[in-house]
Amino acid sequence: MDWRDRSTPLSQVPPHLGRMDLIAGRIDEIVDGFLNLDKPAGLTSHDCVARLRRSLRQKRIGHAGTLDPAATGVLPMAVGRTTRLLQFLPQDKAYQAVVRFGLQTATDDLEGEVLHTAPCPELTLEAVQAVLPQFLGSIEQIPPKYSAIQVDGQRLYDRARAGETVDVPVRTVTVYSVEVLGWKAGDYPELTLAIACGPGTYIRAIARDLGHQIKTGATLAQLIRTHSSGFDLSASLTLEAIAEQVQAETLQPITATQVLAHLPAITLGAEEARRWCLGQRLLWAAADTALEQPLRVLGEDDTLLGVGRVRCPDGDRILSPWVVLAN
Image 1 (cartoon, helix red, strand yellow):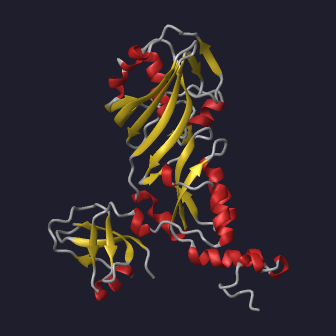
Image 2: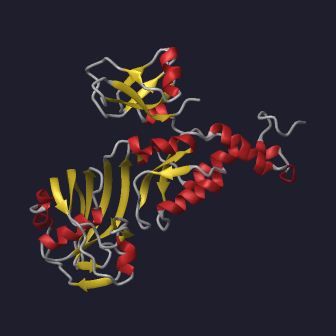
Image 3: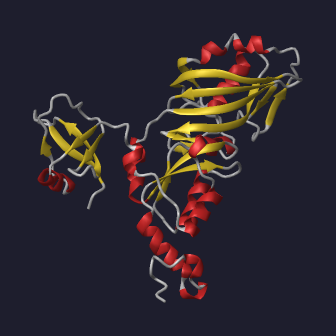
């Protein structure tokens, strides 16, 4: 029997005949796309990348939208050549968050040092709902001091851990909706929210600022990302499920064509496609194509060739390659 034959189940390949090498070879052939990971609590986003590299025997793995270690939920992962496409994913996100009142911490979540506690059993849901509209639309937000934002070339959490006092820059973010899902009364009441927002929004900062507005203090007690970059929690896979599918050779990555479906598409003829894939610029006369916007570039058979953009450097409209995927 030829153990290298793809028709042979990996479970029947004796380990001493290089089962892991065969897995690596087969994975290199089949994994080139996106995975919708359900990140567990306790792991950083980088930890998840490392775990997948071991499971898939693939070095080229990246993720979109970092999640804090305590947070769970959707963490989009790109494998192989599709890591170059992470920049083109949709930016909107959605979360389910639990805000605990009467408590303030250094990190604006339960992972940090407790700075102040003040039981507030008298707090009502109606009082909180009265200020929630202040967190809708385009709002100014100061990110947590313990965050991955860089100031003067250093991560804020590194500077905070070193004891430095840093002025965190204010940023403008967009919150599309805030919906109350639940209320738990008590000395430290808890509010469960569904939040849909744009990129760069810190839910920890919303929890902190909500506590400030109602003068009780608050911190983020739990966070689940339910939607990110076009991926939904209902269709996500755990690290364990991905590893099992790799072993069973049933893993089906989400294709780049599916993930980039939100981008406008243009189709090239055979000769144009050949030239474009070689990095050549093409004259593009279509006036209705927006400048400097990412476009799905397709071949005549609807194969995704990559991502391009129309530019106008010298008065002529040019279709330039941005990311070329096709050979």
